[in-house]
Length: 449
Ligand SMILES: Cc1cc2nc3c(=O)[nH]c(=O)nc-3n(C[C@H](O)[C@H](O)[C@H](O)COP(=O)(O)OP(=O)(O)OC[C@H]3O[C@@H](n4cnc5c(N)ncnc54)[C@H](O)[C@@H]3O)c2cc1C
Image 1 (cartoon, rainbow, N blue to C red):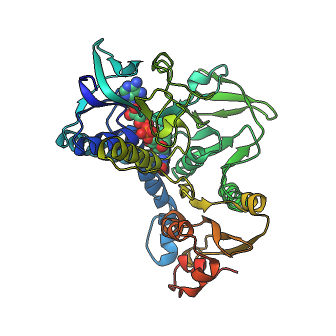
Image 2: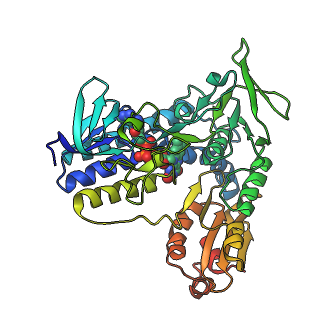
């Protein structure tokens, strides 16, 4: 092997890139990682972590209201300081960013705080114009919010900017109906904004079970969120007071104070020089890889969102780990993408693993479906008219659970444990053999009919 500057050059210090860098270095490789923004990547800096902290903050709006029914003397109108929450969240982000940086440094990874592009199978160019060579290059550059082309689109923001707002707007229009749209809809609503979700189709949260999505839609509408379905952007205009009027097909225009695009995320491959190095991209710009994350150029690999398979942090981390173990630790691991659990931290949250009812019907033919539709005890005392729904989809022949879908308080926490059983191939009978833990919401999992 020719003598390169490094054994591994990683582009992007996000979830996948930091894991791969650290593990490769621990296996003895000489590693450098280039990061053009901040170590930690989307998840830490402007994704999962700050988003979840805002979700916690938003939940207090309901908790404070409910507290009165539990005997607490809470004023009818509680003040909320967005700058306090925002600054505390950003300080926590700084802390984790520091911890990630330190971990890489203590493992001997060289952090290069610059943009890097690929110039050949073993070479990269840095923003300062210098070049580096490496035995292997790992593309872990993630994705960015895709914004629809329409007149005035530059007047809107994306989730990137949402964490830094000066104030919570009174009226917000969120474009898109995926998990980021629904999560921010809940956050803005709980902080007192009037929220309108606008979507190109009639669906929210495609990929999740229909009954669960319908329940979220129904609860969201009950709370006062508005929806505009089958609506395509025609344009956004700003008036002298800073208000934004959004024109859309099929509906009257709406005037709001903030437009947020949550209309999908596209791989960060533009201008990265990949084609020149023989790395093929798909029609969405994602790097094409094999089961070992190797691209069509044998020395260049890719992990995480840039491959546009399952855009979730634990997947990027797993792919980074498997790549480093295989290429530098002699350990051959192939990732199993079946039964990956996921959640939407909406208000209330929902979560799912495995096949939806309609997928299972299509794939298996014979299925059995069990469900529990109940009002959690805490909601009953709080006079909160929100029902939880748990649904179990089983193979009609074997009884094996092939899908579990839930909406209600704390379901992401409950589903993580239940997903182990689904992944292990357990049956409904085995769930029912387990004695209920009473009184909990999770006990519904072993009491379904
Ligand atoms: C608002 C939001 C909420 C989310 N919530 C969740 C959640 O609850 N759960 C979950 O599992 N996932 C969530 N995600 C998705 C998750 O953040 C991503 O799947 C994950 O971060 C992908 O990791 P990655 O390593 O592929 O890329 P990233 O973490 O995006 O890291 C890529 C890094 O590469 C850097 N970079 C890009 N180009 C270059 C270049 N040319 N040179 C140098 N550096 C470069 C970027 O600055 C970035 O730091 C969320 C995402 C968003 C936007």
